[in-house]
Structures are given as C-alpha cells and as structure tokens.
Image 1 (tube, one colour):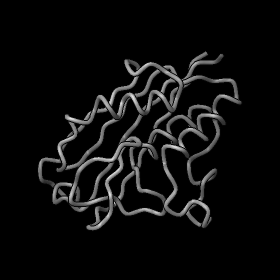
Image 2 (cartoon, one colour):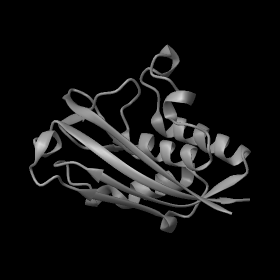
Image 3 (cartoon, one colour):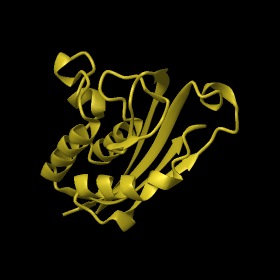
Amino acid sequence: MFRIGVGYDSHRTVEGRKLVLGGELIPSTVGLKGHSDGDALCHAITDAILGAAGQGDIGRHFPDTDPQYRDADSLELLRRAFAIVRNTGFAVENLDAVVIAERPKLAPYIDRIRATLAGALDMSADAVSVKGKTNEGMGEIGRGEGMAVHAVALLRKI
C-alpha cells in the first residue's frame, strides 16, 4: 500500500539570521524568520510525511506556541516526525521538493541537502529530489522578502 502526502511552508527572510535548508547551513546574507531555525524545507517535508501517514501536521506535534521548540533544529524535528511515521508502519519511498527563492542559488548545495535529508529519513539520496526555482521577480518571494517550499512524499506500508 502506498500513500502520498503534500507539504508546504513559507517564511519571511530576515537579516542577521543563518539560512538553514534541509538541515544544511547555506551561505547567505539573510535567514528565515521562524520559531524554530526556520528551515522551510524540513518543515514542508515534515508535513508531507506526517500527512501521508494520516498523522496531522508539524504544528500538531511541534507547536510554535511551545517554548521547547524555540530555535529548534528542524532536521531533528523531521527525524522525530519520521519516527512517528515509522511507528504507524510506513517508510518513505521517495521525496520531491521545490524551494522557491530568488537568492541564494541552491545548485551548489543540492547534493549535500539531498544526502542530509536521506540520512534523516533512512533512505537513499537518489530517492530525494530537491530543486531550486525563482519566482521570476514576482511578488514577495520575487523581491527576496521570503522563501516558500512545496514537497511531496510517497510512503509505502512496511
């Protein structure tokens, strides 16, 4: 049995904060504002895998109203979400994600991000796809005021 989950997340960019995407530190003049480390890629993937397993979303398990998650490592939250998914009898078969941002260009970091995500989800990096796209200068993302991520996960019953 297979299940598909969709995840989405977005955050505003802010000066003076590190940019973390997929658990990797990316050189940038801006980071993502958030209660945790702001890793929108991990957040979207977390929602995708939890949703596919019928286990709600990131806010249900790791609410931003809970002080214990302030500045939390989102890769660790993804690992914890994966443990929930695994306990319901599913494994992640593959992931596909799109990071929408005008800058920085992500191509030099994609392989490292894929490997990090694969390690957190006990899967092969060749089953993880991460793509960087721009918004062609349109809207808030196009002006560099934020980033957004769409993610899709395929789970299989184990």
